[in-house]
Structures are given as C-alpha cells and as structure tokens.
Length: 104
Image (cartoon, rainbow, N blue to C red; front, side, top):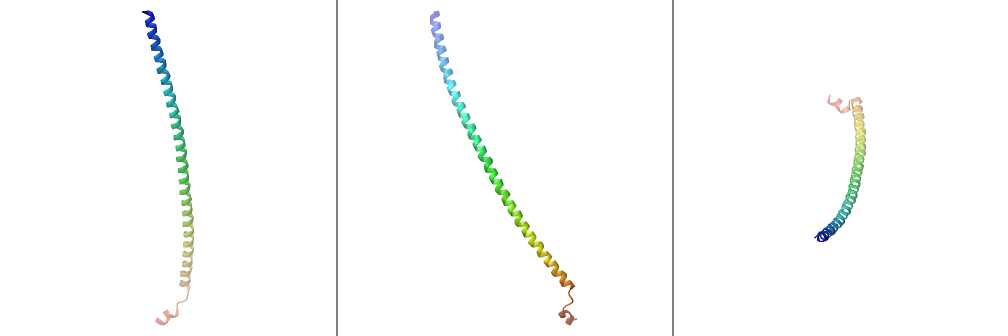
C-alpha cells in the first residue's frame, strides 16, 4: 500500500512538474509579447513626437512668414499714410486756386 502511494505521489509530482514547465514556457512567451508590445509602443511614441514636432515646426514657420508679410504690409501702409498726410498738409498750405477766386 505504501509503495502504491509512493508511485501515485511520483505520478502527481511528475504531472505537477509538466504543468510547471508548461506554465513557465507560457509565461516566457507572455514576457516576450510584452517586450515586443513595449518596444512597438515606444517606437509609436517616438513617431508621434517626431510627427508633432514636424507639424509644430511647420506651423511656426508659417506663422513667422505670415508675421513678416503683415509687417511688410503695415510698413507700406505707414508709408502711404505719411505720403497722404504730406499731400493733405501741402494742399492745406497752398494758396487758394484761381478757380475758387473766380467763383468768389
């Protein structure tokens, strides 16, 4: 009876070892999958950061060009205003025209 119990215990131990070995292999596979997923996520994160950086650089460049264009337009507008002011001041300082004298 004792020998029979020992054989049964040996079979149970062998079964437990097989289960443990299988579980260890499955855990190793899961670990590999997690490492792969982690690497892929890191690559995607880097791609996302690079894409965001590129888009932001492009947007900043566009804004800088827009600001420069607006600045040039404002400068031209200021020159036009100064010319108009000079013209108006010149007209105000000019003697009355002969047409206004003859109508008087």
